Amino acid sequence: MSDEPVSKVQRERRPAPAECFDGHVEMEAIHEGKETTVRQGRVHFHDGARTHPHLHVGAQLLYFVEGRGIAQTIGGELLECDPGDIVHVPAGTRHIHGAAEGHDAVHIAITTGETIWSHDPRYPG
Image (cartoon, rainbow, N blue to C red; front, side, top):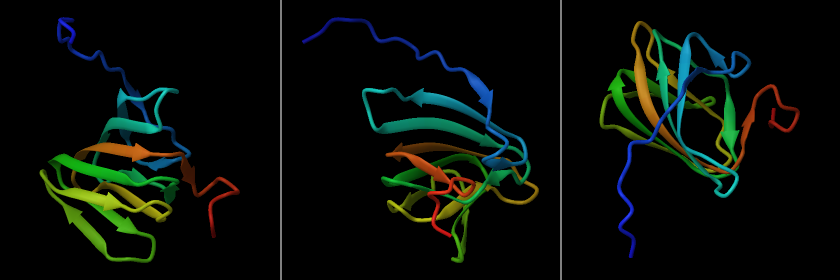
């Protein structure tokens, strides 16, 4: 048992790396570190911004909390996402996600394992 007080988590909002995203995207790490393979982050996609194609070695959950978002398996159906929608991305699935055209979207991403982007030679073509 512990009587340590609860505390607010201090977050730093930073621009997402341009080599992995199209458009204006900001990221805030909620929980990440070398001691865990699970990363949690809040991602704000502005006006139709989205990820480049990528995959995760483990599964990913996207919990949409604001705006109008999208998620899509490469070559698959485009899913439109509203606040409260949760998208499951199976391990190894090539996909994109972000904001619908003309809209902003914010989601919480819970990701396990490494992310492999389309510009990485290990990304399956």
